[in-house]
Image 1 (cartoon, rainbow over the protein chains, first blue to last red):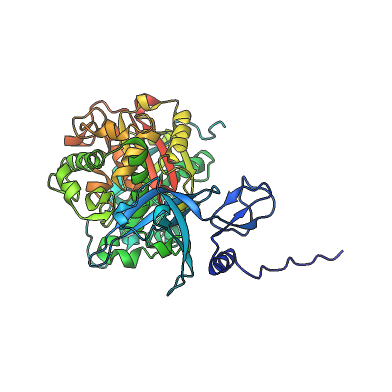
Image 2 (cartoon, rainbow over the protein chains, first blue to last red):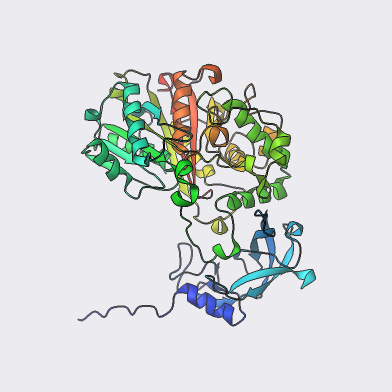
Length: 131
Length: 385
């Protein structure tokens, strides 16, 4: 019996994630039971079962934690963790309001920030009221 | 699960800092490790010829045990450079005990060195890129701890003033420690009024950026009893890894210390009520608060109220971080070794002005990454074994 090598993946999880973003979707992965997973991975981690597949998020979530950074001579900005309605969490930024007005518990909606310099496209958020 | 190491079977017998603060230009991390090793061996009356186990970790050295062995011309039977950030050294203690119990080595040196102040942070701690976090420009690692603080404040009503009290308490202890970097008193107002690094944390909520290093010497309980200084017995150890990046931490108000501490207490047969001196890795004010809660010194969510009246300052109800901590004594980047060192000195009664009277038990808790790895060691003097 001959054994055949498993074919290599053609795209990385990161490239697939970014290609969803380029199409306007914030995508995450789920396992066979629909359990949500973020950041995207090649294989299901412990506690998950089966093959991972991609799902597009509805883009709605709640700010879980928030901090504001004010570098010398540059505009202040915030960094947040957002708990998405589908049950996964990601780091992001809330835009369209002053950074110090971002509150934990705030409803937010994702928007895709275009690729720039070293970064691919990435999701940012706006308060739902302001969207 | 039953602990597999034997309570009190190994002991820390020698401790020493290398040069600290801002070291001479051109000093390497291995210079500092070797200096610490020589001093720690002298502390217990052993020499390089006795060493047959070498443990080391350093942010600036990829193969630190190899480098230290070359430098000191050691050919140990056993070596280990487990790297999980600032908690690595607590895990080295557990690994050294396992190796000693298994007969793989008898005298172990655990060493650390850093020149992050003299060589510059950007040269010594290259940023790791994470495509899911880096685009948002968090100030690493401060913003991760700031996010945890924001969540704790939201969930439990913890205040900025309460966090500031932790920095003030650390400074109070540092003023009793001649080796401490900071030499002047600090007030809550000064903490709140200093430069904001990542809200709610100001620069006074953040650990120092210093050079420094040092070493511990460990051996079997039997041999420990024949050496110069009173042995500090390892009563319990435990470790947990809960995540690597802050966006993957399950609950930002509960750290892996809840688990690593429980393991260490179980092996020691002790609870938080039995502990005389509490040494926890204070990378930021919020870390002290989280570890006081997770190691059982106050209920979850009560950390802010617990520290508010100076409870952990000199003269308070609970002696915490009596060397002045990473906040005011010394913080070369992976501070865990110094946490252990102070616990040993308190148990030996060597702490002069800051000595906690009648100290028989201590907990030394290490933190690595962004609350990522937690490793706890419960220590005791001869009265506990």
